[in-house]
Amino acid sequence: EIVMTQSPATLSVSPGERATLSCRASQSVSSNLAWYQQKPGHTPRLLIYGASTRATGIPARFAGSGSGTEFTLTISSLQSEDFAVYYCQQYHNWPPLTFGGGTKVEIK
Amino acid sequence: QVQLVESGGGVVQPGRSLRLSCAASGFSFSSYDMYWVRQAPGKGLEWVAVIWYDGSNKHYADSVKGRFTISRDNSKNTLYLQMNSLRAEDTAVYYCARDRGRPNNWFDSWGQGMMVTVSS
Image (tube, rainbow over all chains, first blue to last red; front, side):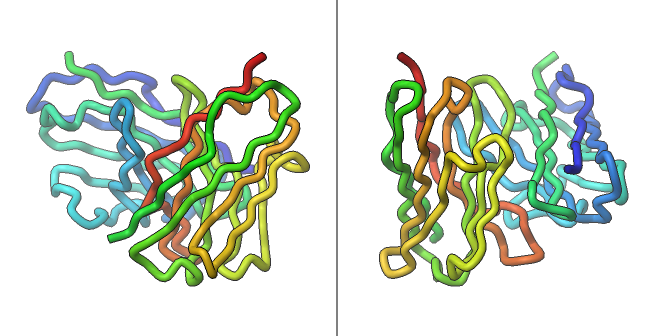
């Protein structure tokens, strides 16, 4: 099983600042990585797939990068609606499909 | 547009059974693999099970193997999750989800989620 580890668990950022979230895989997942955003009481929303391709309707301030075992989600200028929990998910070698534990982006 | 609507959740005693349903619309249901993903209160996302588009193949998380059964009825555009021998640790919101088609196994559509509480 590929274990996905996200860091930090909580990130405190001021509106307008940049947020950098990390996701590490226990073995290479190539570029087979997706990112999701989840707000309290809501369904997860796909942001990024293929490590760096934005899903339909996702603003350009969200950028994914990395390959192999190290991945980054960067939110270039945080808006109020971006404060949420973010999950990474690998789909390279499964079952099982595996998610990271999440990073909560909160208002500083 | 794609719609996934779960039903069948609720409160159940440990050891009992429950069946979740997920009604799909807005896409060709019989062409897509379908999944169940769950989220325990205050916790992260956990993949539970997948069923191939034609029902020919199924896979389960180790945590539910032997207790849960995923199935589908393509004539009714409906996905199911039969949950037997339920445990307290199965308490979670259960989501049905669709991927973009193998090998694009990311989830682009999710249901609204259905709460299952296992408690005496």
